[in-house]
Image (tube, rainbow, N blue to C red; front, side, top):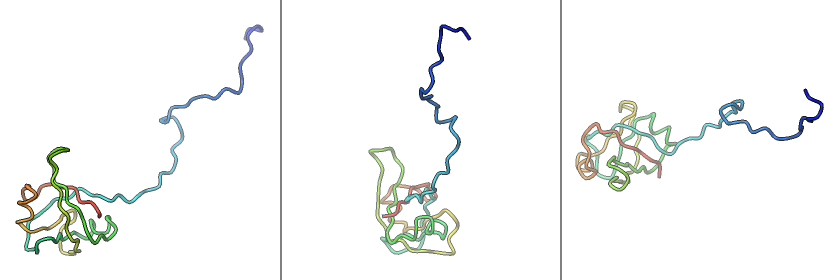
Length: 115
């Protein structure tokens, strides 16, 4: 080192986030889940949820189903949530009429949100 230049000490060093040690992130329960929607023998206004979806949404009494179609064309509908243990994982069962009103086909991936 040259004697004429002093090293400045005490300045904060900016470290980018990707170089910082990983901090434990608290796992938050999301209020939504993407699932396949199916038509079935269900009364209108009721959505039967599979066990894994029902528990992940923290046992909701009502759910909102959002069908795809872009930000301004999304169709939303509120259903009463009912647990169906026989239903396959990651699926929701609604009536065929409700499926038509949402404008989606059987087996389409939709977002289910807790209300």
